[in-house]
Image (cartoon, rainbow, N blue to C red; front, top):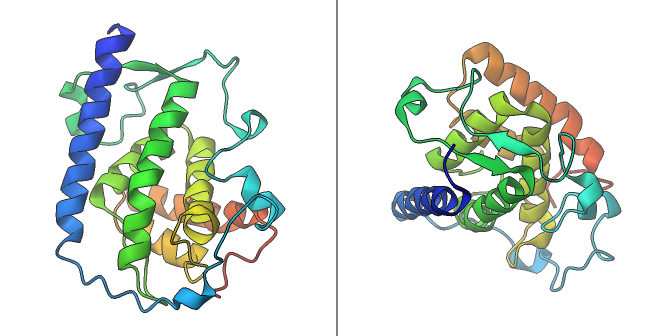
Length: 211
């Protein structure tokens, strides 16, 4: 098993490289979103956002986080659930669930602003292929955690990011994610069906509606 220090450093480097590639991808996309800036709240706090959204927001409470047995439980980043064959030859790591959570929050902090910048009202959400790779792996590794991750992504997009906009709907996001995941058709359909069914339960606001 790789030591925690160098292993996590290598993983962080790989994530940064993926994010840099996403930046280059988005440079080629028209950045006119058509979003009405006046519809965006000037200030966002837990009190000003839907209560349930706060529970899946940028800083989820410990009770809302997916855990195995203890906070020190390990997430194995390779196993029989590997979604893409090419992963089999890559260096792998064991990461505590609490650290994995922080890595996923890092993905959110980079990807959500890009989605908000490039998504046009009524069209599928613009998300990167790298985000699709992350969700593909996460769905097959732990579908419950994947649902939480997508709910976090939507909450960040609608309420918590500096440029958050309620013009981003669940259907837009799910359609965008479905276009970039590398899952067999049956698994992709199962994922989108579950996301449409379960994510709205995390919010008091109607996240299927644009505002």
